[in-house]
Image (cartoon, rainbow, N blue to C red):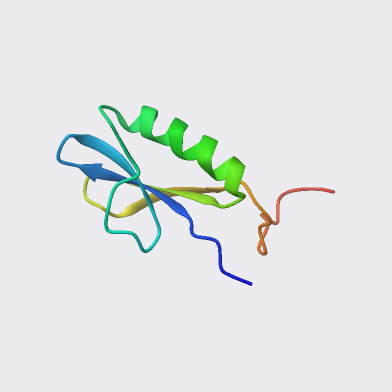
Length: 78
């Protein structure tokens, strides 16, 4: 079974880009981070992976899982 690749929202020379983990090329380029996050979310839902959002400095700001999360938040009640 292959490991699914998360989608990263990263700074780009033309604004913001979505990029699959391990890829050197951008999947899509957007003028705002919000647009890139929306595109990444749509793709993550389809592929059941995680969206990892980076800040302008390149450091990870946030991540959201849209698949089978092996470590769900402890504050969720079932």
